[in-house]
Structure formats: structure tokens, C-alpha cells
Image 1 (cartoon, rainbow, N blue to C red):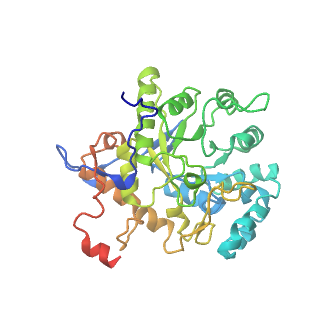
Image 2 (image 1 turned 135 degrees about the vertical axis):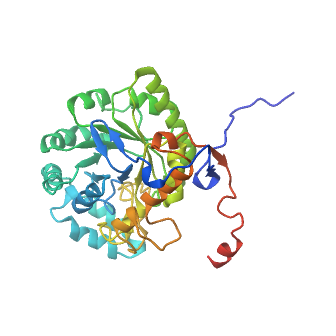
Image 3 (image 1 turned 45 degrees about the vertical axis):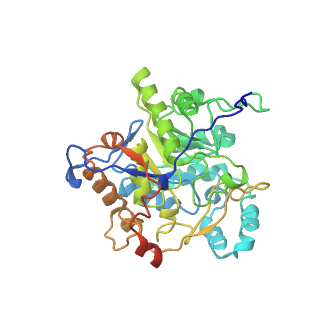
Length: 381
């Protein structure tokens, strides 16, 4: 008798498993490619978002990133809304010994969030000419979203480790995205995170403006180790892009997807777009800039969880600036600077004038792409 199949698995791919195939029918001068990103009525010059993490985005970074052309998201459940002077607290986290830092953060993040600081941070960003985008978990969205809206927020992000359009809980009435979209009026609502076709499409059907894709790939996240959940980013992005395109064919409404997590260099960034992303969210690579509030450290929003931390503080150092990271010039060969130049060059090499064109570029499974012919580099690493 043949053995019955209990569960069948498919192969999933991350950034190091694939390669972009260059040189189609033509190439394009990199200066001619178009990088614009639209989320709702908002338009950005760059398809980049800065992650809603305390070590990456504060008021100053939000302003500077906006001026550069991207979208920075401020975490409403971090130190920015728990303390009048969050800079002092960030300094404590930065100097804490590694074996003590998680316990310290659990204590720091146990301080109550102050609703008045939600509106204050939004206004501070707006007063300095920045685009104000903020994030909250589903649990606190009902409380913080109206405050942010009334303060003039430009975009609101609902973010958790895994988000779905249908969530069952003990509360009488949970967060209903359709209602949230309506209550936020003209403010685009971005939701994440998810990794599947069905969840992405169902979220889009609620009327939200964009979806964040990725569970567990971030440099500071340990959800994959602690919970065992996640899908490698290339496969997750491809599946989500299929949902976006299916939804667009059915409704005529285009909802961009944002690959969030694991984009640690220009190569991973470019592969995200070819996999189908409309934008990428950056964390650790921005945490290493002089403008980042983490003082060379990076940690996720689940790191200070009071009972089950799913993250850790990682030291990334401070060895660059926001300007160099985004626009160069650079003499580094690790792909962590001049991301805009890398994206333009890759698009031009593949003959893609727009991000939508770049999404159509061929990609191959190529686990040897980083090591083939690189014996000297590997020996000297």
C-alpha cells in the first residue's frame, strides 16, 4: 500500500536564493528611470519607507527622510509616546550591556503611553515640513487613529507581526478595517504584516491603501526562532504581488505592496522589486546612519514584550549618513550605500523605465549567485 500524503510542502525562496536576469531586448540610461511611489493620494519621489522602530525613526529622522523623498513611519507605541524626552531613554538603551538590555527595555516600555504625545509628535513632524506617518498595533489603533487624524497625520499604519482581515478575539468588536478606512477620511491606511495571497487580497478588499509584506526577516526580529513562523521574502512578495494584480484586474484599484524586512543591501532591495514590490521598508540599514535615533543600535517592536520578547537589540554601528545611504557617493562594496544609484542601475540594465516594468523582469533560482567565482572574496572576508 502506498503511504498517504499528510501535508505537501512547496519550496520558498529568500534573497540569497535568486538572481535578477539582466539584458532583455534593450537597456536604459539609469538617469531616465522613474522611481515614484503613490500611496493613496500621496506621492513620493523614492519607493522607500523607514521602519516604525524606535532605533530608526524619531521626529528628526521622519523630517529628514521626508525631505529625501521617502516615507518614514513613527512608532506610536514606543518611547516617542511614553516619554516627554525620549532621547534620554534611547541613550540608556544604547549603552546598556547586552545581557541586560532586554530586561531594561521591558522596564522602559512598561511606562504608559501618553495619548497627548501622539498628536504632539505628528505636529512636530508637520511643523518642520515632513510627511507625518505613524503606526500602531491593532489593539491600540482605535484609540490612537482619531488623535493622529485630528493632528493632521498624512498616513496611518496598522502593524503587527501577522495581520489578517478577519481576527477573532474575546473583545465584543475588534478592529474592522473597512470602518477604520472610512473614519480616517482622506488619510491613507497602510496595513501589515502578511505573507500570503489570500490574506493580502482580503486586506485590499477592505479599502486600505497599501500592504506591508514580511514576517520575521528583519535583522532584529526573532519571531522565526521563537514562534517558527514566516515565509522567505522573495516568495512572500511574489505571492502578495499576485494578489495585488488579481485585485487590480477585478476592481481597477491598484494597491501597492511594500516588502518589509531583510532588505540589508542594494541587491536584496532590487530583488524585492523584481519579485513584485512597489516599495521597500528599510530598518537596520538606516539604523547605521548618523541621523538615526538608536545611536548605532537597532531593535524591533516586539523586542521589549513583557512576557515573550521576539527580537533583540543588534549593534549596527554608525558608519554612514542618510544622504550617503540613499544617494552616495560611496566607496563601499557591500551594497549598503547609494541605494538609489543601485536601483537606477539595475533597472537600466534590465531595460525597465518604471518600477512596474522592473516587476516584469525575469528572475532565476540561483543559490550560487553570491559565491560563484568569488573564492578570493570569500577567503578575504
